[in-house]
Image 1 (cartoon, each protein chain N blue to C red):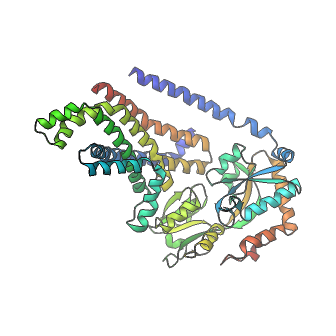
Image 2: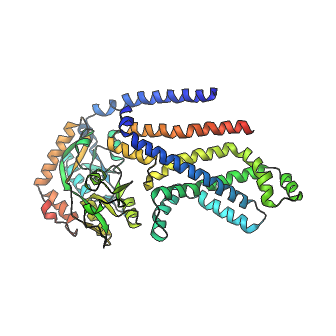
Image 3: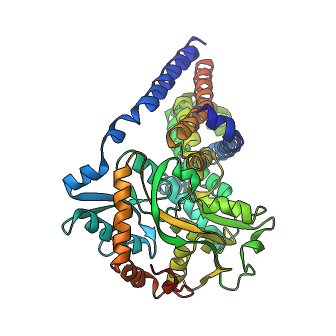
Length: 212
Length: 278
């Protein structure tokens, strides 16, 4: 096992870098898009509510691999040329944002309705009361499930392996096939995923304690 | 912080367990079992074959059965070894899954467009070659790429399949090209169609199969390597391998081999099957 690490570390390092990069980009954008659609889902305007629901229901219920393959195969055919890494990151962002939207919506709805009424009657607009009154309370509540989504996101980034996105799993496949040491190769990949997810999980716990 | 160390402790225990498991688990059951004996007893040979490769092994959507050159040859070999009533069971494998499946004993032998290479020969035992392929490239009709050396420019993207040695060869013939590895031939070809790469590389037999199905794509430049396909069995199964070699000689001598070759390769444009007759 040490032999594989010693000889294949450039591949592993590129894999780790691509996985982290994809995760960070997808995490950032899925949080923004997810929160936006969560707000859409509870807006007084009926059209916006429908848009929010449709988005969440569609992307929550399609497998991640299918979304990613769509961006990898169909988009370059008709729209613009995108590589595997971009296709994978877009797919991951869209997929995760649907779950984050549901998580954040549950958080918003668990904030007492009196808070919104109070904010509105004090002269704040809908978006202002969201931004300053509701969302800060909602996020505090949803930190544990949100942490779950983030960890899932990192693990789901292995979908990049299927579209040649140069992530950890892709490099793992390559190393397993080059060295023909299947078991140790995937074991090393698993450890490297833990290296990313463990601190993340620990940080979310810390955040939960600090804010609660 | 205490919790963190708890985590790490648990983690290292798990690691240790896994290392011990890997070091002792793999060698016991399989090496003691004689595959040839076991197969004679059960009257079945389980073959790992391709299910996504036209001409060699392709799943027929209507019947749900795998069909191709390798399938017919495997059936012939099974009959030769076990007699007329011998049963051949086919398990679909990919370049990625075939080695682990063989090692775990899920299949007795791999007959899945697998090139005999020295590196692989360290892990498995090969029979004599049953098909002499060579690596080539497939491009869209009218593409400026005429041979493998045209790909040796930065910005050119070559598509291949993970676990096939063709991607390594591209590194020798066109080191400047970027190689994308996909999980199987169907995916690699889809990626070629959607313009994710300039050419698809693998063994010519497989590429000819793709161009038969999709007339808009052609094999250019001929083959630039020699890729003899062999049947792989687990290390330590000398009896089984020798028996397979003997059976291969037998089917070559009685004309079964040529019959199967003609059945699958006589209608392939650009390929002279008579040169490959044995």
